[in-house]
Image 1 (cartoon, rainbow, N blue to C red):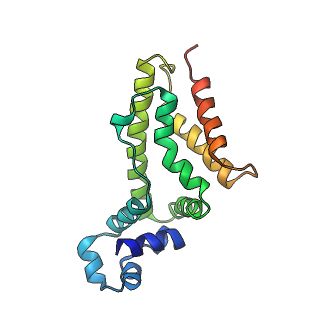
Image 2: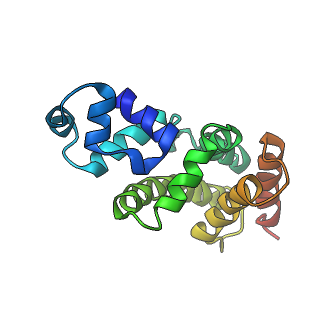
Length: 177
């Protein structure tokens, strides 16, 4: 069932993740799907987790900040550079404008990412690598927004070199003066 949900997510986006669709693709009853994932949010969360990359553990964020940013951003960089996975991200962003279930699940993932990012920034400030006045949410917006802009709204090529330049710029711009 989770493989069916994952296939639907990658092929057709988050809107395709319904109990009925998963049941049909997995060739099981809807009741079986509901027994494992009682809500659409549960089902969508499980599908995203199954196609997601390994999530960083805060214990892995030991510095320096540039290494921590690599650990945090690696899954997104890999997904955005992948021609099959990048459209899923774009679809997810678009569907979040209209689908409260997708908003809920997206916000949960963002909250987890923000918490890990906050830990990395706070530790870097303690080590004297970054200024103490950094706004965590704006920092995430700056980094992730740069990635999304390059991938979806620009003719420039999004790749590892571009992502590295964004992360290097972030560290340089936010270094103590």
